[in-house]
Amino acid sequence: MTGKRENSAGPGTRLAAAGRRPEWTGPVVNPPVWRASTHLYESTAALKAGTAQNEDGRFFYGRRGGPTQWALADALTALEPGAAGTMLYPSGVAAISSALMAVLNPGAVLLMADNVYDPSRAVGRSLLGQFGIETRFFDPLDLAAYEASFCERTRAVLLEAPGSLTMEMCDIPALAAIARSRGAVSLIDNTWASALGFPALERGCDIAIMSLTKHVGGHSDLMMGSASAGAELYGVLRHHAQLLGHVVSPDDAALALRGLRTLGVRLERTAASALVIASWLEQQAQVARVLCPMLPSDPGHALWKRDFTGSCGLFSFILKDADEAARARFIDALELFGIGYSWGGYESLVVPVDPAFARSVMAWPPHGLAQQDCRGVRLAIGLEDPEDLIADLDQAFRAMES
Ligand SMILES: *Cc1c(COP(=O)(O)O)cnc(C)c1O
Image (cartoon, rainbow, N blue to C red; front, side, top):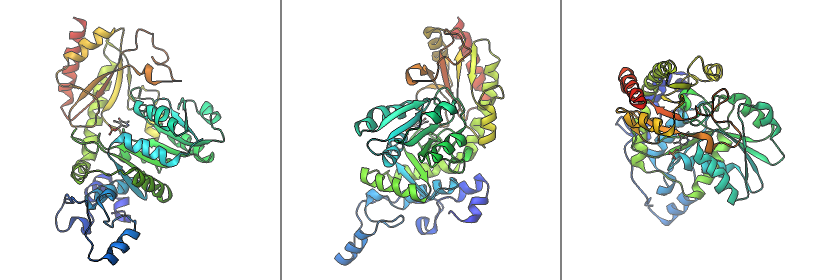
């Protein structure tokens, strides 16, 4: 499923075909759930021969996965131009921590964008620190400071766009090119756009990571992560994932594959709804600023337009002159938005965001806003009708002010 025709076809066509190798699916449409731990061999000689081989697509023992997991990994590879392979992990955080451990050694320095997902920051500060790896945070909007922060020990850079919670768009191709020129591996958490909205390897990144829990699963009922890379780094990721014992269940892999088939239409729909809702929010007196790179007024809009081919339903906004209690009144009054973490499912979600605790060098509230305008709200727009979501937001603003 990585043939020429699939690669030149549109995303919908590729999503429909990806990972459906005849040897894995047999005569049926969806790759079946293939549950197994033990491979039975016909003889000790066959056991010995099987043990000596460690390659994709050869069943050895359940920890190295089986046809259902391979079908999903294969499908994700087919969707990421430039990827030679994809490793699956039990969560997005497992993908991030394992990929970082695979490319870093004791004594190395990791440069981490200041606006990455907060648990990624904890991986750097805490887990990697235990292994003698130093994490330094940088402002991904300040290319000169970033370039100046490289040293002889810098081995990797972790990027994410748009920024977690605060949604800043940075110049990923430039950041990745600088990393490469300094001999450092660039990893990107590409959960927001997915390979459909941002072909990360094609734009110069070395390892593209996704939390499949979000858009690929798409139905808020599974946890999984992935990392895709070219041949050499895929080998490194695979070696380390095997050492760490990572495997995902075939049942979850089948669910993720099912979600993947509709990824394109779900992203299109939620992105279109998000743009309508973000544009409406911009006009509301209760809103100090909308943080959403799809909006023409957003400072990151030009970069988003240049580098991305899509987006999704996730963005944030900042309430104007609202205290903690007012924000709670607003969120608690929402009826169509569930209050909860995660995103990328079919249903809309909302959480309060206060990113100041998760930033070392970037400012919060953003420049140009007063200190009292710092209460953030993050919306994950689902597949509901946008007019209904707007009506819900509207009544919640009124509840906030009453
Ligand atoms: C949720 C999320 C993760 C972590 O994924 P899990 O599957 O929940 O471990 C990583 N990065 C981003 C941007 C996320 O939103």
